[in-house]
Image: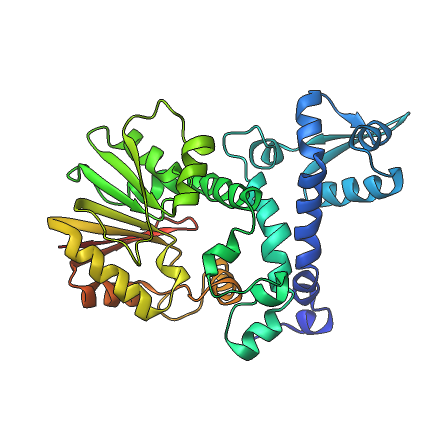
Length: 346
């Protein structure tokens, strides 16, 4: 039951209504290079110096920096000569481009692509279909062709996906012991970050990243270190082309892009290709069975509606899809982070 205080001053409503303002403050500070500049400087910088080096107005930068202080992304020190700003540790780790755990690229993808699509959320809910055509004037018949509007956009998306696995990759890959599987195919493996983590954790395995030709080329040339010998690449469309035989197939953030029919079609092909005793590992953000959360996953599910043909699902729904394709002994592990793991065996 709501308290009288909540009803008289609905703080949570005000927080939610300002949510998109908070996001854009963080996105804008990333895009302008605020966090990178402060990291490189190695010391607090004044407002005038920050504005001059980043080519912005003093008035605008002051308000942006102060908002970042309020959000605990920056810290400020008031000196006789004025305000001096520095990064907080969380910004150094996650919002600077040079950090191994940088989330910069996914921030830019959210700011320049997801944010624009969500302007049409009301239309999405009314019509039950994604809004790429309205947002960008691009036909959404080739859904993932539309998602990659340019090589720069593709690189931004793939680098952003890689950044997620720098935080969550180890958790999903150690949710189950994958050491018995020596030949692994990462279907839709994109930038290859999960494959790199997999060969590091399981030295006895080889991983092949299977993705669209233009994705593979970008991954090979710009995202996967050339010295990583146990990662191979396979160009193709796994909805149209054959899936090679392997011990284990990883589908990370793949099934949530598609409706149940397409998921069933893909899993059936995976089952046919899978060696006896092999399996499939699904990496997805799982809804609770009672649909009460997590709220991040519920928001992701709306984003799937805005951007794709899919949705987020419960563990039971993924188990049902796996069972219908022939997989047995389906097990679920929640990691406590954004993404969880579901393993089915043949």
